[in-house]
Each structure stands twice: as C-alpha cells, then as structure tokens.
Image (tube, rainbow, N blue to C red; front, side, top):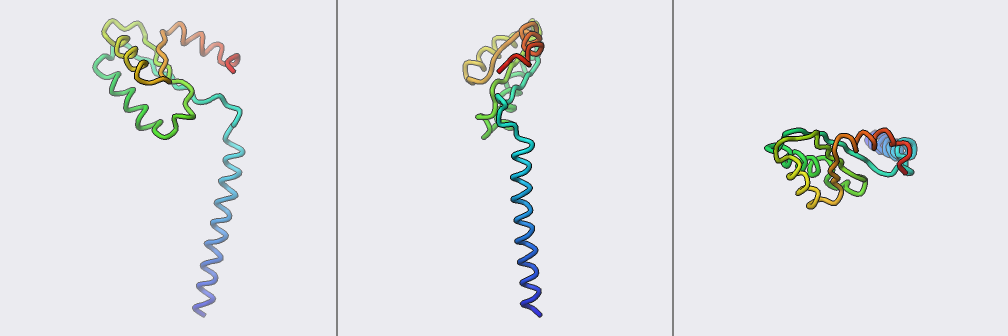
Length: 118
C-alpha cells in the first residue's frame, strides 16, 4: 500500500512538472513577441530636482536590474522645469547609456510616430 501511494505521488508530481513545462513553452511562444524592438519607458518630470535622481536610479535598479538587455531606452521628458531637474537628468544620461533626455514636444512626436519606428 505504501509503494502505491508513493508511486501515485511521484506520478502526480511528474505530470505537474510536465504540465508546467508545456505551459511555459506555450506562454513564451504566444505572449513574447521576439520581433519586438525592446521596451521603451517614458518618465515625465517637472521641477523635481530633489527627487528625480533617486527615482530614476531606483527605477533602473529595482525594476530593470538583470533585464537591461530588454530595455531599449528610458526616455525622461522634462516638462519645462524651472529648477535644476534638466541638469540632473543630463548627468544621469551620462551615467546610463539607455537614458535619453527629451522635452515634451520631441516626446509627443516620438509617440505620434511610434508605428514608423523599427
């Protein structure tokens, strides 16, 4: 009786593992578009000189750590700040290659032409 229960448990675990492998393969094939160019992130900021550097650095570290190869660009849009936000963003763009600084007009043009970007 004990062998029967142990054998049943092993078969259930084996079938569960097989199911998870098949599910992962189907999910990867169906929901991952390998033709995608990458992930674009747009962050809009205005007059945030005290918070922007910490936010951008923690965003890159916490959310994108280990997945940098998927991130095409992090576009930080300065919404006509009157403080030192733009200078801080320019310093960050020197530290990180995937950070691009833009103003709101350039960002709007980029979003309007998103279908043309390849």
